[in-house]
Image 1 (tube, protein in one colour):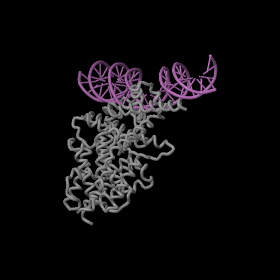
Image 2 (cartoon, rainbow over the protein chains, first blue to last red):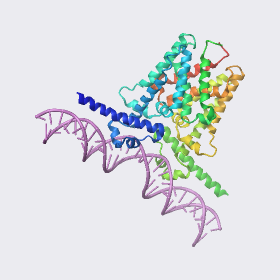
Image 3 (spheres, helix red, strand yellow):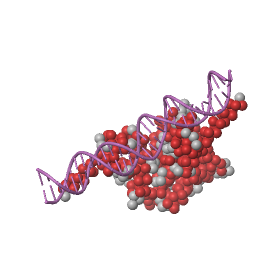
Image 4 (tube, rainbow over the protein chains, first blue to last red):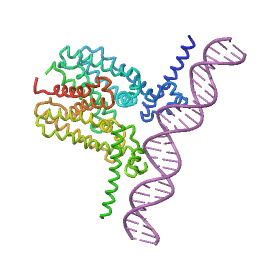
Length: 208
Length: 208
DNA sequence: AAATATACTTAACAGTGTTAAGTTTTGTGT
DNA sequence: ACACAAAACTTAACACTGTTAAGTATATTT
């Protein structure tokens, strides 16, 4: 059984090599340059070899998404230290913005591109676990905010989507190159943070 | 000079024919099926003819965007009748949602796709007039809300981006097929409207 | 009627994702 | 060590994509 394990590891190794190469390309050259042939060129294999490890390009893109969600979870490691749930919510938003600014290609793939979701639709269990998990974390914090009387009572699903929508909308506009066209380029990030701040203040019912 | 005018009209006619065909394809078959060759096939011309009327595909996509903004302006014709600026803001958001739900392909093209903005970047006057105009309308309403003491004072740019971000974020998630994965399909539209309602209520400082 | 400008097409280039069929390498059992 | 089988990988091709240079009709002007 040792051999089998070793074999499996080998297979996993090349699979990871493919994902690494894909990551390198779409981060450094953009998603539009991420082609099966480009990846093959980098790893020194034939293009068709990639199809031995992924059903199709969408499958590969979906797996890249999953890696993106892992990185996003990492960036949220600083949340548990914050006691005040509303401040935690604020920080989560800031983390989100930070992630979007540092990894625009990842963000685009995770939330805008069609490919990954098309892959999901073909799967047996077509639940979007990564998205659900991220949203669940957001909901948890919002529930705490309501319980501690910091946010007005209301449907958790509705509030969560509104909050997520705001932050996502801002980053999405930025990633899709719309934000820069509307706000002075030097003030984009600042405006995003201040918009988030404005939202948090607006929903805060403890002061005022 | 009559001939020249007639000729110009002819040229415009074919140009419109191309745009009509493009519209038909990307609305009925999706943006991924919108190819130069497909358009050519529909209008009964050779693919290269299209390049006599548009610099490249991005140019064509950009013009389609412009048409989209026209339709969006139409849908906002019901705003002037509403006296209360906060209610007008609310309605504008609802119009936005309505547009996104009725014309997802348009919405995707106008706010998510890279093509149109790449075209814009190549133009002499690379201002995004359509976007600016839409945002200006939003800002006007927000200014009124502040003047009438319905929204807390603050930087107009910041508030406008926050409000726009929220609505855009919700529609964007829907258009990019993320919303349905997180909220029960039958409740998506309702959740969007309730999220908008929640935002409007949260920023309203007249009651409570 | 000849010259010119306009409108359009043909053929090709360099890419893309993907597949069927063939080859080489590796591992297993005797 | 050798034969067999399974795994890993490649070649060649198909059907697409956007785009361009060069060529051909058609219409207009002189």
